[in-house]
Length: 444
Image (cartoon, rainbow, N blue to C red):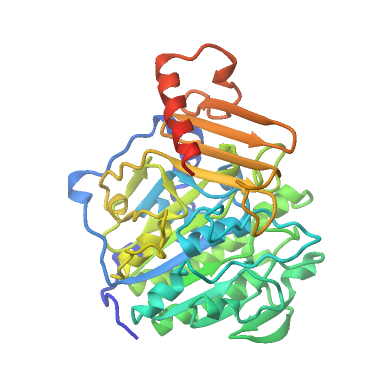
C-alpha cells in the first residue's frame, strides 16, 4: 500500500455537529450564481498535494433545489471551508454519470455507449475495455482502491464487476433498493463478491461505516456512492433528521438527504484527519420535483452541487465550467498517477488547477441522454437529447423519432431556460455563441 500525506488537516477539526454554518452560501449558489464571481485571494492559491489520498463521494438525485430546501450542515461546512463549484455538469441520470466518472469519457463515446436503461432489456453493463476504468489505472500504479455503496453499472448477479473494473475492495448494494421503506432496512449486500441479506440496519449508516473502515485502513482511493436520497421514499430513523412533516415524497427526500448529510459528517471527520482530498457531488438533478430535474438536459437536471476540500484546496466559490468526466484525470493527478494515453480519460481534464484557485479555461461542458444501452445514437433513429453549455449560452439539441429541435438559451440572463433565443433574430454575441456551440456539437 502506498502511503499518502500523513499530516492532519486542520479544516476538519471544528466540523460542527448539526449546526448550520454556511447554508446561505449554498442558497446563494442556486439563486445568485450568475452574480457570484469570487476568485480565490492570492494567499489562498496553493497546489493540491499530489500522491495524497482521495475520497470521492456521490449523493443520489440531489439538485440545487432540494439542497437549498434542506438543512445540510456537513455540506455547508465543506462549502464554507472548501471550494464550491457552481457549474458542475453531469448526465441527466444515474448510470451514465457513473460511467463518465469511471472512464473519463462521454456516455456516447464509441467504447462506452451507456445510454438510458430500458427496463425490458435489463442488459446494462459498463464495458471494461478498451477504456481503462479509473480504479484500474489507480491500481496499476500500485495504489489501493475501495468502492462502497451503489454500483449500478452491471446487472444484479454480476457481483464481480466492480473488481473487474479495478476496485480491490467492494462493499455495497449493486443496484437500487426496491420496495417500500423497508428497502433501506432490508437489502442484499455484496462484499467482495459474496452476497448476504442485511435487515434492520439503515443503509446510509451501513455505507458510512464501511467507508470509514476503508479510510482508517488507508486505502489511497475510496469512492462512496450513497443510495440516498433515491427512492423508495421513506422516513429515516428519527435521530438522523429534523424534518417535522414527512407526509409528502418531497419532504421524505429532504429527510433522507439530511440523514445522509449527518452520516457524511462522520466520514468527513475521519477523512480530513487522515489528510484525504474530498470531492463531493451529486449524480444528477432532483427526482422529486415538478417539471425538469432528473432526466432533463436543462440545467436543473445536469448542473448539480460539487464541493471539494482537502490539502491545497483553495476556499471560495468557483464558476469554472467543469464536468463529471473531469474527475477521472483529477483523481489520477491528485494520486500522482499518469493520465496520458488514449484509453485513460479521453475526454477528461484535470481540475487540480481549479482546486488551487487558478483559472481552468474550459469553454464548454457537454451532457446527453440517449435511447438504448450499447447502441450508438449516431447510427440509430432513436431519441437523443444533447446540450452544450458555455459560460453564458447553452445549445440544446432534442432529437425524437420524428423531429429535431434546436434551441439556444442565455443561461446567465435566463437561468430557467424559458426563452429560446432562436425564436427571434440573434444578437451578434448570441450568433457567435450559436456557431461555436453548433461546431462543438457536430464534433461530439
